[in-house]
Image (cartoon, rainbow, N blue to C red):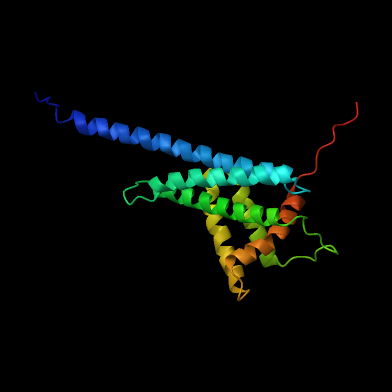
Length: 197
């Protein structure tokens, strides 16, 4: 027994189903991106000043989970038939952000004690300051802006790598880690003190 469907019903059904699935997928990507932004705020509060071993371990596990989920999302967005290029770029940029967070975090975990400078760091070069600001913006931005912020950070990072020959990207990011944390610490707003009653 064959069931006959009217010709106009089937395409309409699949178009609606595809639109609904893409909308839910987009919302999932947005929630994942918001988790990465929330992680950046958590890092500011828990990892900048004397992070505990437990805090570093929580950070490592969280970043690994976010990367794992991002790779799952990328299986869909990297498919040649995936229709939303902006969403594809957002997933790729967020994954890149997480990979750098992982490098910074694991480099810090490998050291038993945080590095201390014997003297206050000198005024940084404008190029380094622009790179650190772009990395900070990329980490702290809202998910819908992450692709733009990631492109800017990547461009500035590539420019910086060209100025330090014989240095790999990983070596450069490891060396940049402490300076980045200093930069973030300096940008942190001081706590507000309530007025006396």
